[in-house]
Image (tube, rainbow over all chains, first blue to last red; front, side, top):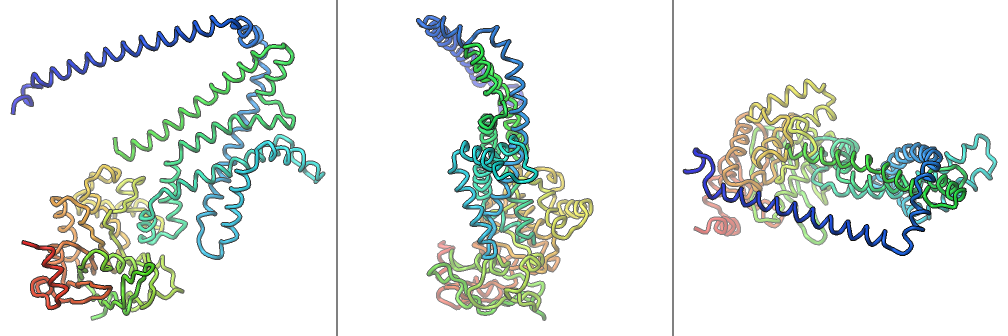
Length: 281
Length: 245
C-alpha cells in the first residue's frame, strides 16, 4: 500500500490544505460578522434619543462605587442562604424521590405523602410559602422560635425540594430496569441496588437540570428580603431610592451573573469528566 | 443423582398470554441444559422465574431441594446461589470492569475489598482480560463485555448458572470467545441452563436439549437426538425453518 510507509498521499495532503483554508476562512467570516453586529448594536443603543438619560440613571460609575459595599454585604447573605438552601433542598428532594420509589402496600402512606408533597410545593407560589413561614409561624409564639432568616430559608428548601425531588425521580426512572435486574440477580437487596447501581447513574444524568434549579434558587433566595433580611437586590433597591438612580440594580445584576458562572462551570466540568471517564478517553 | 434445579408445573401468564403452561424441568448437578424454541416460547421467562425476577402464577421451583418459590423465603438469599447472564450483558456502565465484578462480593458477602479484588483479577486473568480491569464497560467489545458479565455472575460461586441468549447480541466472530468460556465452565462442572437461538451452541455445550413449545417442553434428549432426529412434528418444523438450506 502507498501512503502508509511514505507518509500521506497527495490526495490526503490536498484534503488537509483545503480544510486548513476553510478553517481560516470561517474564522475570518465569524470575526467580521461579530464586529458588524457589535457595531450596529452600539450605534443603535448610543444613538437612541434617550441614551444620555438612560446612561445617567443606569450606568453612573460614582453611584455604582457608592452602592457596591452595601450590595456586596447583601450578596454575602445570598451566598450563605444559597449554600444552606441548596444542600437542604438537594437532600430533602432526594429523600422524597426515594420515598416515591418504595414499593409494597406498607409504604402506601409514605408514597402518597411524597406525591402530595411534590404536588403541593410545586403548586404553591414561593412568595406565599415565605409569608406563611416568616410571618405566620412566629405568630404562634412558640418557645425557641428560629430567626426569620432560618424560617425564610426553610420556605425555600420546602419549595425547591419539591422540584428537585421530581428531577431526581426522572433520573431514577431513566435507569433501565435491566440494571436493577442485574443488581438483584447478584444478590443485592433493593436498597443496595438503589444505592450502588441506580443512584450513581441517575445523579450523573440529572446533574445539569439540578444545576439549573440551583441557579434559579440562587436568585430566589433573595425573596427572604420580603420578611426583612436585606439581600443584594434589596440593598440595591434601598440604594436606588437614596440616589434616585437605578445603577445599583445593574451592579447587583452583574454580581449575580458573576456568581452563577463558577456554579455553571463546575457542573459542566463534573458532567464532562464523568462522561469522559465512562467512555474511557 | 440429586437435582440442583426442579421446576414442577410452572405457569406464567402475562396479561392474556400464557407464556409457561405447567412446565416441568429437572436439572442434575454438573448438567448443562439448553432451552431452544421459537421467540416467545418462554425460554427467557423460565430463566427469569428461576432467578425470582418474575413471580410464578402456579407451580413450584426447588433449588437443591429447597422450595424457592415459597413467598416466605428471602429472594435475595436465593439469588446469591444462582448466577444469571443476560443477552444485553447488563454491566454497570458507571463502574469499572473490576468494580462490576467486586460489587456483589463487597456489598453482599461483606468480603474485604482487597480480597475481592484478588479474586476478580484472577478470574479476569483466566479470561485474558486482566489488563481491562480498570476500563469502563463502554470501552470493551461485545464479546469482552459478555465475558465480564459471566465472570461477574461467577464471583458468588453459584450453584446454578443461567445464560439467557448470551451470544445473540454478538458479532459472529465474537461468539467463539464466549463459547470457549462456557465450555471451560462446563469442564469445571458448573451446572447450567441456557436459552439459545443457536443450534451449534446447543450442540456443542449441552448434555440435553429441551424444545419449548406453547409453554411446555415438547421434546427433550441428547443434542444429536433432538437436533438431528426430532420425533415431534413441531420440532422438525422449527429446526427446518432455522436451516432452510
